[in-house]
Image (cartoon, rainbow, N blue to C red; front, side):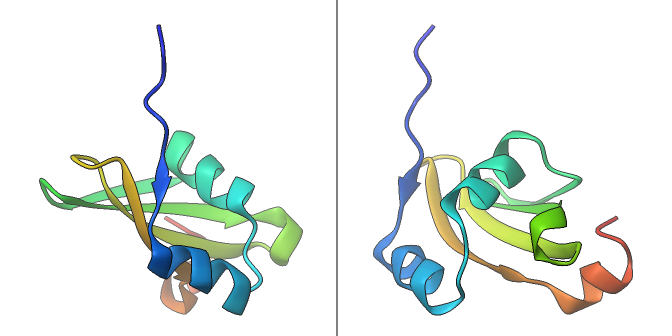
Length: 84
């Protein structure tokens, strides 16, 4: 079975550079999140603790209808809550 490729928006491509994010961290958050929050049909938040970045919690905003990564950043509140 073929996986549909994940698309990175222009916004997230710039944020990856600006925030020193690793694309693999984002993909790992989507594929095996520590926590998932369904906001709407078109907006899902994936949270993943990133061991390579001092255990901080990465938040990925994803549009599953378009298979599109909208943005990603380290969430201070979720880091304090151990990404749960």
